[in-house]
Length: 97
Image (tube, rainbow, N blue to C red; front, side, top):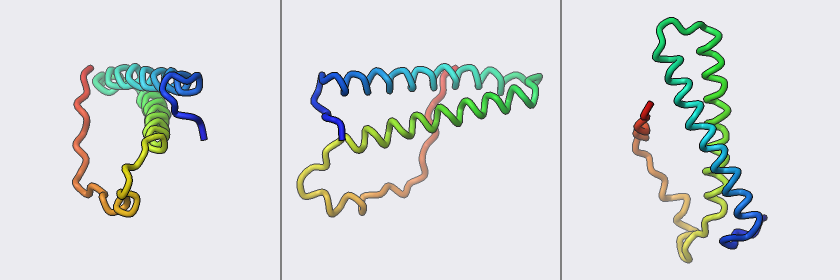
């Protein structure tokens, strides 16, 4: 496991990589929104946009998982961690195009 010391080389490298992935995801979301907003978009354009969005979502989920593994669980919460699942439906994030 990587050291998570603030400011360490590996930590900065991971932060930079994550920032690049998220920036790429934001750019892809903007471009995909343009494709979906255009009623004249071809099937191939829509499929390509969906494939790119899928890649970006996979990257974002990997970042979330990685960040979760690097977060420490407060003492005494190890046993209750699995019990604290939020079953409420997720609200869609507001998208600005």
